[in-house]
Amino acid sequence: MPAPADFNPWRLSVAPMMAWTDRHCRHFHRLITRHTRLYTEMVTTGALVHGDVAKHLRHEAAVETPTALQIGGSEPEEMAHAARLALQWGYDEVNLNCGCPSERVQRGAFGACLMNEAGLVADGVKAMLDAVGGRIPVTVKHRIGIDREERYGFVRDFVGTVAQAGCQVFIVHARNAWLQGLSPKENREIPPLRYELVHQLKAEFPHLTIAINGGITSGQEVDQHLQHVDGVMVGRAAYHDPLLMADWDERFWGAHVVHDGRFGHEGLISDDWRLHIEQRMVAYIERETAEHATPWAHAATHMLGLWNGRPGARAWRRVWSDHRLKGHPVAEVFALATQARRAALPVSKDAAG
Ligand SMILES: Cc1cc2nc3c(=O)[nH]c(=O)nc-3n(C[C@H](O)[C@H](O)[C@H](O)COP(=O)(O)O)c2cc1C
Image (tube, rainbow, N blue to C red):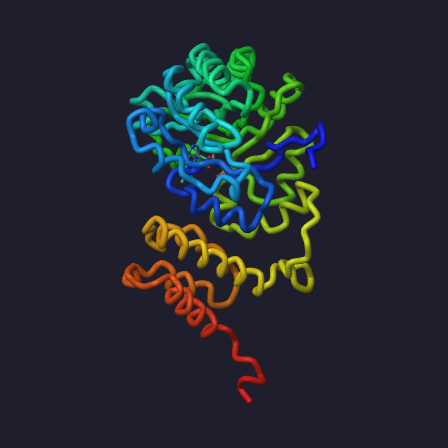
């Protein structure tokens, strides 16, 4: 069935996060939410021009879709090359990173410092659009400002210039990037969040798709932002507490979720469903190990929040994080983790006799 004309694919997404949102993590998130847009970690254009392309881009496109490839770079020709690869490898979007403040990225003169080079970003966007010929969207993720530049006019002019080159979707992390003196982690915590600037962008550019990002941790907050902007991107909260996404398909995508035992009485996420997700991850890991020699820990590390808040969660996590089990088959680790979790359950009256 074709999507309705007003369908907005950016309504809700999980943020690109280096070392976190790799293909294993995206597979896991996809088991929880079918429709939410997922973003890869940033891949530099240099890695795609000179490196092992399959290593960076291989993914199960049909299972994972919709997924955006995020790239980092500053040479329009290289960006065009990366965009072509995104299309070839089955990604649904190519997104340019104009928000990363790390020193390594600054040395490469891309990431957040590109906000000072709106003309160059516009050239890059144009080159990417030409390269993909409109078959997938080209989008930009950026901050509201750089260093002490806090005027709304700065981000407005950036968006205006890049939009003129044909970019129609902007994902805005609602805080400045301070390029000196803060680590990337501090740059996600210390510069204050100023959501109102992002809401203002939407009011000023109603024809553009504007998604907001930064510090959003609950469905209620998503709802509130959707009153002002087209979309919300959630990063750390979704990663650390993945079952936050359990009601997203129904709540934000209007999807009729076939009753799959996801919610038990009182609307709480059921243990059966958690176990079902874990079993599907184990099956995925077995396949990955057989086909690509992927160590189980590479994928399992992303699901450590699965049993958050349930009895035995800590004992369960300890098993899945135990490096001494590295050489063991994943099915064995799963059995040990389940055993450890169940050992922490309160003994039922029946069992106690
Ligand atoms: C571990 C980690 C890695 C990140 N890597 C990227 C990245 O590769 N590209 C990017 O645009 N943002 C990256 N970010 C920033 C997130 O995409 C997001 O903008 C930021 O975490 C704020 O959103 P949140 O408060 O919902 O987490 C990263 C964040 C984290 C925590």
